[in-house]
Image (cartoon, helix red, strand yellow):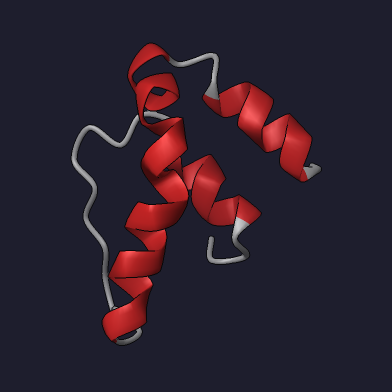
Length: 57
C-alpha cells in the first residue's frame, strides 16, 4: 500500500476521517516520549492502517 492508498482508506471511515488532520501530531506526541510497549486505542476505527503507514504495525 502507498501512503495515498492508506489516506484514502482512512477517509472512508467517518470518525477516522474527522481526525486525519491531527493524526501526525497525535502519533508524534505519543512516540516522542519513549517507545511504548503497548498502545490501547479503544474505538480505533481504521487507525491501525495509520500505524502501518508509519511502519509501526
